[in-house]
Length: 287
Image (tube, rainbow, N blue to C red; front, side, top):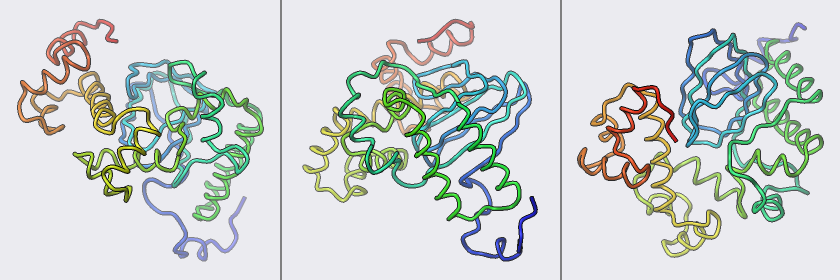
């Protein structure tokens, strides 16, 4: 449909322009690659296609059409396109929340211990297809107001709440499941910007001792160990998915030497970075 009074929309300061819009339509051909470091929380709707996904500790996950994927902010994501692929990206700014009656904290309390390990996806149902089709149509008409996007994100979470089981939602949102999702969101949004735990404490406006207690309560581990694990996940992806040399990766993550980087990899992965790269070059499976 034709958008009425388009100039009023386009000239409004609430009109979203440029990259990282709340909704993005991506179409890729076989052999192309999508590779990004995410700034915001993202829900990805796979309308059509087939690709191999590498994310966190997962390499070459087989993703097909009709799936919904969830990524927290700060994630590194790579998709190797195998068939003509059409995806819709919905970006969420702020705290992820289903509704006032079912916060993520409640899901965590009820199902946190029951979630099996793995990357959890949702299947798009009829309501999800209807939702995304209407959303895309309006955006293609030129309706790119930030207020509209905020409203549509609220609708999306209401639909998820209404048409998927609590068990499904608990698995899907497990990267952000916690007793305090706002604190967890803040950590995911900022951990790649810092080098020390104290910097995270400063961002959260906790005292050092208060931050350590809060972090341990929410994540179930220390902030230093968690930062180390996040670094390991990104290093794992760089070793598997980039042409960077071992020294370049060591420099990228501020290791004092290749030797200290090698020790870190051996501790985290059970293998030196050289052996990991050799395994990949030989086309063998890596854990």
